[in-house]
Length: 311
Figure 1: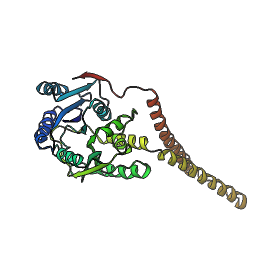
Figure 2 (figure 1 turned 180 degrees about the vertical axis):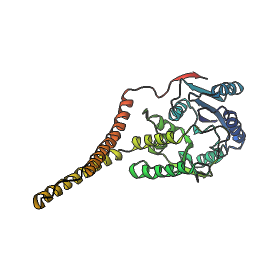
Figure 3 (figure 1 turned 45 degrees about the horizontal axis):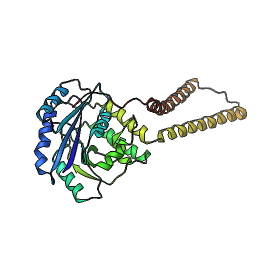
Figure 4 (figure 1 turned 90 degrees about the vertical axis):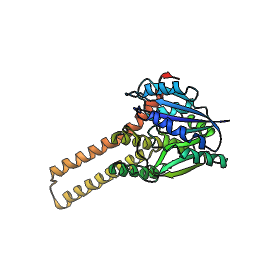
C-alpha cells in the first residue's frame, strides 16, 4: 500500500486544526487507490492554543496524526522544510490549515499522478484573488511580473504551495539546504514535470491570516534576492548612467563658462542634485547589503529550525 504524507504548517491556527482534519477525512474514501495516511502538523511557535489542539488530535488518532512544535516562530518556510524532512510517504502534499486549499482537490491530484507515470507533481493555481484587498492583489501581480522578468526561474501568478509530489521530487527539494528559503521558487527550480489545477479562491474557514502586507512584501524580497542577481546589475547600470549624466553636465557648465562667461548659479538645484545622488548611492548600497546579509546568514550555518516537542 502506498503512503500519503500531508504537511500542514500551523501558526495560530487553534480554530482551524480540527476543521482541517475533518475536511481531509471526508475525502479519504474517494481517493482512486487505498493509501496509508500520515498527517504532519508543524506548530511554528504559535501564541494561541494550537499546540494543545494538536496534542489532543494526536491522542485521538495516534497512528495517523503526528506533530512537531518549534521552540519559537521560525516562519512558514522552516515549517514546510521540517515537514518535508519528516515525511515518509510515496506521495507528499503541502496544505494550509485554514482550508483555503480545498481537500476535494486531493482526489484529482492523485488521479492524475496514478494515470500518468511521467507526471511528478500536481500543483494548484488560484484563478482569481476575490476576497483579498485590492492593493495586495495589485502588488502580488506586480511581483510575479517582476520576478519572471528578472529571474530565469519562472513562477506562475496565483500558484499556491498546495501540491502533491512524488518522493523523488521531495528528495530533490530537500537537497537544497539554504537557510533563506523561498519554496515557490525552489519547487520551480528543481524542475520535474508539473501540472497545475485552477480553482476559485476560497476564504478562510476561521481565524485571521498571519500574513500582513509588510510580511508579504518582505517575503517577496526574499524571492527576488534568492532567485535573481538582476538588482545588482541594475544598481551598477544606474550608477554608470548617473556618472555619465554628471560628466555631461560638467562639460556643459565648463563650456558655457569659457565661451560665454556665464556664472555658475543655482545653489538650490545643486543641493537637490547632491541629495538625489546621495539617495541613489544609499539605495544601491542597500541592494548590495541585502545580498551580503544573505551570504552572512548562510555562512553561519545555523539550523533552519529547532524542535521543542515532537510526536
